[in-house]
Image (cartoon, rainbow, N blue to C red; front, side, top):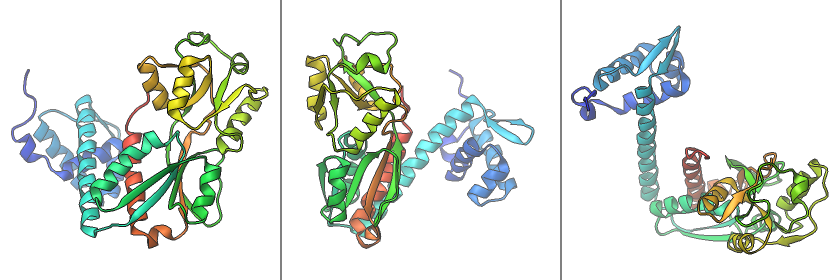
Length: 318
């Protein structure tokens, strides 16, 4: 294979080049890149010219006053974004380690969010501050919120239906992920080409507890489809139990899309072709006002959540 890189690629490329390339990928205009990076427009143009000389092939094409990346430029920008992310992560971890944060943070989380978000956030948190402790409790939002307000929990993470302001509580959107309808591989509807909500309402449904926000949202979804919510139901929080129930009986349930895709790839479930109207798609975290500024351990964990959320956003759905 012909080598296209100019000599000294590894030695010649700098963080300035990488930041300019990523900004150009996102913003398209030199003027916008210049403003975002706080440098002059000639400096941005110079960095692009230098980068093309280092790589040995064009990385941009021009159309009027806009710049577009070539296929090689796009690939290089993707690597640059990953490299800058790693550098930012290293700076974050070192800063956290130097700060000497210790103590503990108590987290309440709904089961549909825990496996997607918490492993990465906790791993980053423990790398950053090995002597700080984390405790995690699963439950419904209506059960966890009073514990947060009472100071039993420092942080609550939940999927939200119809977000609203809460007195004395700060909140932050984390990520958005669809919830999908699933059944076991042997379910009578597993391989149906087309389905309506009327086709599934009479089957056993695995649902959240009747008093939960999630259950209210699901009931509203059936009402939106002009249907009475299922009466043949199993109320369960346990993901492991729910997956086993889907395997052994003709039940129907709801799973976050990533988890549903993973289970489908393993041959355990199928995703039914039903529109869920962004049901419970947004995950948010909640904490008591001013606690993040007063509790450095909570503040650090919130930063770890944000870092982990960025990782999740870069993983595309199938």
